[in-house]
Image (cartoon, rainbow, N blue to C red):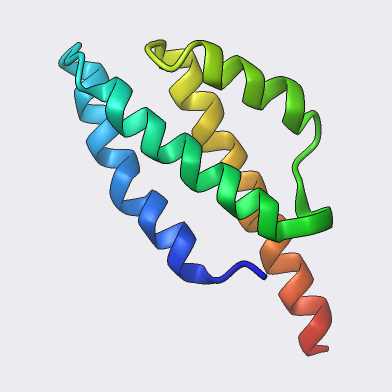
Length: 94
């Protein structure tokens, strides 16, 4: 099952990626790979918490990891997964 540590890893990685995209630094692709792998691992643990259209969106990200739009889409997938995770935890605790 997911835990908050995975989301914290993305929270650390996201600003670094934003800066690298802003600076047009080619090393952003390596960090995008880390983010992609983190999301893939999380979704593997998440089960039914997968965001809508995950497969199509994830394929786009993988194929365009050098592109700022892919970074924004990756960030959105993390946000959506986090919301679903929070909703699930709230239901479990009520």
